[in-house]
Each structure stands twice: as structure tokens, then as C-alpha cells.
Image 1 (cartoon, helix red, strand yellow):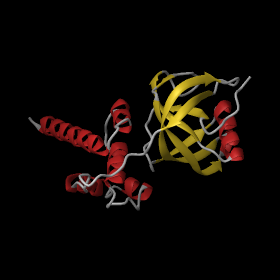
Image 2 (cartoon, rainbow, N blue to C red; image 1 turned 90 degrees about the horizontal axis):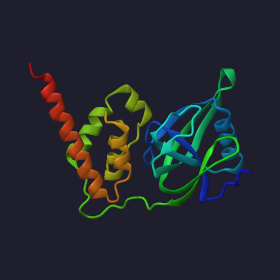
Image 3 (cartoon, helix red, strand yellow; image 1 turned 135 degrees about the vertical axis):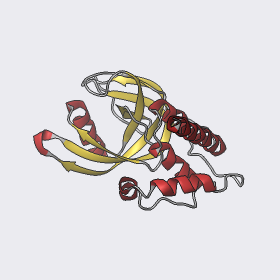
Length: 206
């Protein structure tokens, strides 16, 4: 028998991507278990947990998942042809996944604890290099359309948007999501950016 959902027991949507705080993602839903999940979430006015797949597939599988995910809200939805449902979700808060269950319809649910969102300290001032990189990415029409109003005075918003937008592997994005302090997140990002720049320089060599 499926266990009812509560604030600390929620449905899980395993994905091949990482969603950060205030980040958005569009999904097309076609599997019955997730159609049921979205219906339940909307009827009961709660979100669900998005989490990166460690091993396995998104479709027709019960994959192995990471233990840190993101509580997301459904901020838009639309019905499509062929019984598809399109939704837009937005990251709200990081969560720790303590125990998972497989419901009767093969939907994963989890017992969770909510993690405090990272805080700003006096040392966490705006990093000009990170801001410049984000603003250069905003010149791309896709980024400009998706995030027209990034708070350039919020280093966390800058850092999480870069974490999403940079061309890095999902496990690396997961490590950024798991960063326990703002300064750790920023330092990790700067290291990753330096590695990307070095890779670009080496690639351009004859």
C-alpha cells in the first residue's frame, strides 16, 4: 500500500540533470506514475523532490539516486497532444534524502530533511569575474529568455545560475549543489571555470 505524502515524505522525480535554488526546468511528462504524481501534487498544493540519477535511466526504471536533491514547485503546466503534460518546475530548497520507498505504481518516494539554504557572510561579496561570466552568458538568447532578471547583487543567485549554465558534467553539478557553505561553492566554481579555460586554451593549440 502506498504511503500518503506529507511535508517530510514526498514523491521523487529522478532526472539526468541537477536543479538549483531558483533554477527552472521544463519537463514533458508521459509515464503514468509521473502523471499521477503531478496530479497529486497539484491537488494537494505541494511540490516534489528532483534528484540526480546516480545509476539507471529516467524512463521505465527505478534508478539509484543521490542523497541530496531539491524540493521543487510546479510553477506552470500545459496539456499537450498524445496525453503528454508539460510542466515548468522551480528549485526552492535543498533536501537530504534519508530513506526511499517504491510506491505501488513504481513511483519513488522519500523521507527527507530540509537543508538550510546557504547564507551570505560579509566575506561573500560579489565576485566581479563570476558576474562578468554570467553576464556574458546572458547575451545568449536562450539564457536571456530563461533568466531575464538574475539578481546581480546576490552572489548566491549568480553562483547557482552559473552552476546550472556552465558546460560541466552532472556529477560535478551535483557536487556544487551539495556545497555546504557559500564560500565553498564560490571556490569550487572558480576552480571549475579555471579548468574550463585551460581546456579551451589547450584545445586551440595547433
